[in-house]
Structure formats: C-alpha cells, structure tokens
Length: 334
Image 1 (spheres, rainbow, N blue to C red):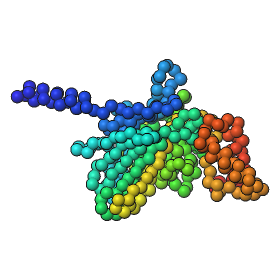
Image 2 (image 1 turned 90 degrees about the vertical axis):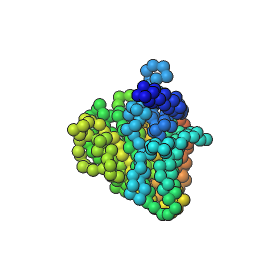
Image 3 (image 1 turned 180 degrees about the vertical axis):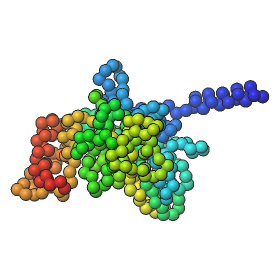
Image 4 (image 1 turned 45 degrees about the vertical axis):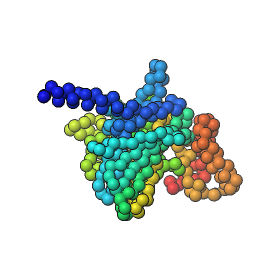
C-alpha cells in the first residue's frame, strides 16, 4: 500500500508539473519582462552588453521573484496577490501586454495589467507600466488600499543603496511622504545597471508613502512597517538587504465600484534620463514673470513631444530645456 501511495504521489506531482503554466515573456528593445502565471509574480531584465542574448535582472529574480509582491487591504484585512488553495491566478494576454486576475475572496477582485511604455526618463529603453484595478464585489461599501514590495538588489554591494533626483545617496532607512518630500524618482544601481521607480509624474498614481528599509522589516504582518529614520539596512537575519515598499491611500469604494493604481518602473538612461526627469512639471507652477505666454506654450509642447518620442531629443537639448524650465519656475522650491 505504501508503495502504491508513493507511486500515486509521484504521478500526481509529475502531472502537476507537466500542466504548470510556462513563464510568459514580453520583450521590447533591450528590456525583457517575464510574467509567472502560476504565482502572479514578475521579473524584469535588461540586455547585457556582454555575451549574446544575455539578460541581467533589474531586481531580485530568485524563485520567480518571490520576494517582490503586491498586497491589498480590504477593510483592514490583508491579502497578498498570490494563488491560494482553490483560488489560482487567472492569466490572459491583452492588446498591449498581459494581465493577472486574482479572486481571493468574494469581497474583491483584482486585475493587474502589464504593458510597455516610453518616457524621456528611460530614453531608448521602455519602462513597464503596471495598472492594478481593484473592484469591490462585496455588495456593500468598503475601504480598499494597495501596496507593493520591490526587492531591489543593484545597490547592495555599494555603500550607496539608492539615490533620487534630490538626494545623491541613501544608505539608511528612509521614508518619502506625499505632499512633503519632492523626490520624483528613486534609483537603484550598480556599475552597469540601473532600475528607476517613478514616485511622481503624469502617467502614474502617486503613492501616499514610500519606505526604504531592510527587506525583513518591510515584509511585516501589519499593513505599515515599523519605521526608524536612519536605521541601517541590517538585521540579525540579513545584512545589507534593502528593499522598497510603496503604499497607496485607502479609498472608499461603493458596491461594484473600482479603483485603479498605475505604477511605472524600468531601466535608467544615465545622465540623459536624469535631465529628462526634471522636465515633469505642473504647468500651473510656472511663473509668468517676463516670459511670453507663447514661449511657455512652446516649452510645454516640446516637453510633451519628448514624452511621446524620447529618442527625438539630444542630451544638449535636455540641458537647455531644463535651464529654461528652472528660470520659469523661479527656483523657489514649489
């Protein structure tokens, strides 16, 4: 009997492995996105300058990137976007990419769609747009929120784990708060690769709070982690293991109502990308001063054109445009 049960277990295991969904790859330019239908996770890669068709990960990709994830809060209850017993992840291709569908409870359903997009920030390399749509299926009003953990890895061998468009070096626990901190992007890089996460911009949903800390501290049972400004990235279990936790506001949804959160991340285009990032501006903040309305309109039109076609601009023009924009903004810190 024991042998028969063992044989049955092996047969079931082999059958399960045989029917496991293969990873789904999307490639554009020098960027490759891999989606894992079995787990609802994803990995992101950039084509290496060394070797033939060799890609390098832009964040931790072990075990199908199991250490990076999304979670939903439903009236205070936390659900990780991952398969549960009897509730597998649905997967489908879309017009512009592909999506996961998570139905983990009768109270909500989540569609998470992945596609490529281009911005001046990334230059010739596309960025990945992740749109997460949460629908209230509980039959009554409720409170919903989203957070995302990104297990960054590129800066961990250097003394400086992260930087932003405002801060040249982040090597200890840090928090970014909406309406207080003006950093518009967060960068993780090593000598050859760089991953950028957008915190502000016209095509994303600005998060309420972003935490940078040790991965273990961010991977907490509570919705928000324990935070201590300036604490190191070390714990007794892991050394120099930093990560990013992105948290969006709670939103009250009526029955059948949906909320959408748009997140963007991708490869960084060096100094050209940094210059381009500064061009993200609210037109209402431009001071008229001595500038003619036509000159302001021309500048904004050119910025919009660069967003649509990043390859159309040279680094020299980016520097000139940023100088004009700084003058119009008045350099007052608005």
